[in-house]
Image 1 (tube, rainbow, N blue to C red):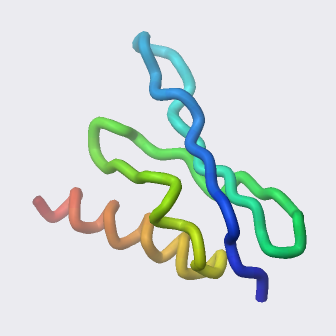
Image 2 (cartoon, one colour; image 1 turned 120 degrees about the vertical axis):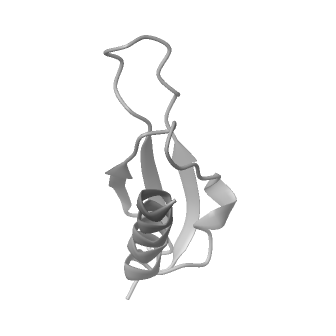
Length: 72
């Protein structure tokens, strides 16, 4: 399993049809992967939240925040 050593979040949309922000992570072995995109008016992230997590944990973080929003 690969541990995340850094993460970036692409730009927030400025207009109606701009792409949603994407979370891209870099693992300890140097590989990079775009994990997911999200609706920034529903949930938010910072790159630091992903550092030290494994891929599955990062996806679980997304899932937890998404479910919390849907239940609110």
